[in-house]
Length: 555
Image (cartoon, rainbow, N blue to C red; front, side, top):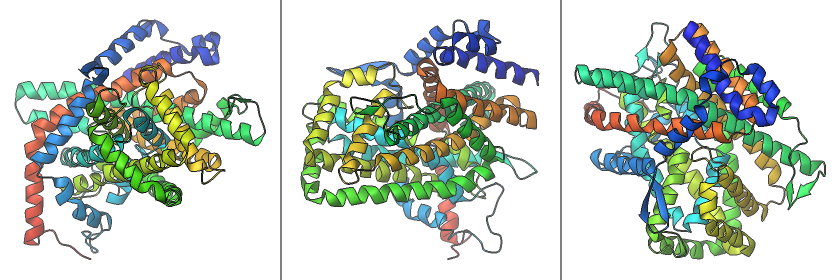
């Protein structure tokens, strides 16, 4: 209990350093109970960010983050190693979602708490959002039209990485007598490493603990504070437009809606959902995610049809840009890296977060959830991001002003990608500009689009917050235990920072949170390399059982 209380106060004290400018130093000091504990945290955060997002110059004028290269290489390698399981298993994945392998007499077999479809929607809700759509516009702006092709390929290879992570998540999860389960990379790292001897067991404990701490803290930033912050800004801008408030350069000024009120409303609603655990969360995500997807795709397809005469030219520019990428820093290589970076930050393949949600599924066979999980990058990246890219791609041909904006983004690529507000993963200033570009593309057909965009922003933010609450909670309980006090402590902490996110200036906080979140991909990928043969064996046994009829198809 004491260590939970201490860390609870330490985290509050750390984050209050980041909100002093927004709520006033006096108020921040009142809640900074352990400020002396983190006096030097700013320098630690900067060093952490430098280490995780270390840049390597691969071509003149192009620097890539090593962590991105680490994720790309792993995704491609495992796709080959698993014999393109993302293609071979796609039909089966769809059949699992449709319930064709569910025994009507046993319902869902095995221990667990949610259905495959519910787990899929929970994981998707944590990745698909306004930031991802805005990031697509930035990828096109900086990487050229060829970036659209590489976004597609990043989703394709990411499908295999999701299969690996989520198969391991189910295989090594903790199953309790009350029917609840806990899983994710921290569990398969510690348990999987223990199978290789004493030294590896201790290394696994260390890596597992690092992962758990990283996802618990990272959830408070990219999955929480950033979401409430951006949802508030979208609502406030629409409110200002509706009330004919002051404008600056065509953009509504911030400051009309009370951020404390908006943040508090979000916090209360999120708490009401997450207090019921994963079963309560998926009851929401299984309704919101399909609704958001259908709504967005409907608007997008209408825009593409409206721009249908520009589609041939769009595809010509895409395939020309793949290998030439004229005007893009670093040429084709630069285009590839920019697109993969955006796609990975969108689908989180290799980060391991989605395996936390998928570990909760009711199943007797670990590979079933691996197959279901490979649909995430397909829907979230190949469908949503690719369709978004076609909307922007056709619109920039039809409307010179949109092309000019994209050209401006390309000219200022260095400033956007290195702006203190541009936080990789949480999608800062760069993606805010990207949302404007995407919105302009839709407004050509739907002049009133800013209004549904604000609603969508709130729904995307809400669904992301409740999904990441579960991710962070499982990291927290891995460290502090599965007690009721431990769980409620984190849920309260999480909702407090939803309010803080709507109010605060988040530069340093998000910087550290992102660094922690993407740092955890290092032990996660190491674990997948080590445990890859076990995943391959599980998949082979599973396919054998299907062929023999032991695993039956019921409809």
